Length: 143
Image (cartoon, rainbow, N blue to C red):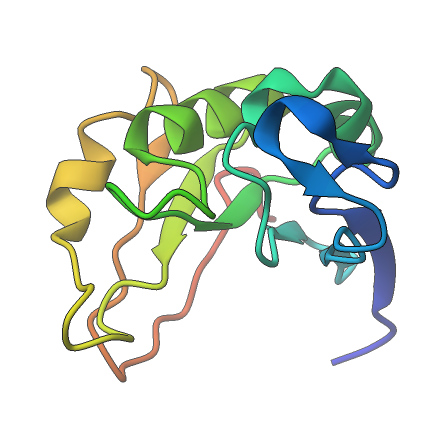
C-alpha cells in the first residue's frame, strides 16, 4: 500500500460557536484528510451543523485538496449538517466525489442517501456505498 499521511482537521470550531450554543470544550471533534499518494480522502468526523458557514474550518481542508469526501450528515438531526449543508461542504472543498455517512447506522434515525445526493452541486459525483458493503474507487486522474 505504500506510505499514507493523515492530516487532522477540526470538525467544529476550536473555540466553540455561540450562535449554535456550542461552548468550549465541547468542540474537540476532529476529521481527517488521508493522503495515499494517489488520492486524498476527507473524512469529516462529526462536524458542526453549520460547518459550511465556517471558512476557518473549510480552508485547511481545501488547502489539502481532497478528491473524495466521506461526509457525515442527516436530514433533520441538528448535530450534523443537513443535506443542503453537506452539499455546500462538498462544493466548497472542490470534491470530485462525495460519500454520505451515518445512513443505515440507526434504526430510528435512518435516511435515504439518494435524497442526500440531490443536494450535491454540479460537478460533485455521489458515491453511495450499499450498507455493509465495499467498493474499489479509482480517481478520474488515476494513471
